[in-house]
Image (cartoon, rainbow, N blue to C red; front, side):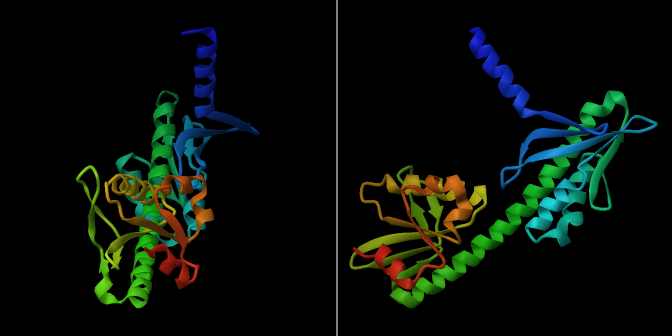
Length: 244
């Protein structure tokens, strides 16, 4: 490895874990990234017996921003107990000796991250379900029930069957519609299916139905094989997307 390459690797590793000292209290940013892009951060305080490692309420604030604060404690308890982490006043924490400090930082970080991601996943799965219902209702009203097949399995070029929201068939051609939430799982699942279906010799049109393009950020480009339509757009856009 060249000196330049070694320097690049060392720089990348330093950026994975960041340490800040604020008035004698240390904050450690870990290489655990939440759904909206922020890194999990834990706080380390020195105590008479060693150290207290906590998330300083980080997980709760992230969950509260999603409007899901009511389910925080129940969800966090599942992950905290498995990692020997405690919950008090909506803060995840553990008390450790100097020798246990590394483990304590990782355990609190993991409990915090898993709690956030589980709640986010459920929240965005619910949004995908709501979008799916809205889309199917609109398609049925536009094209008639006989021309709309809800929840079909669409075969891709790899011979994998992909569950989609609906298929509209008219004038001898089909258009595949899929509701996609802003959660990475929903985006990645749809993107994989779209690429596979688009590789068919006689590929159908593909339409992604989203709440907001802006909410998808840079991940919007992953849906490239599909035409992306926002829920707020009028029915004429859906009609044109399915036109021959």
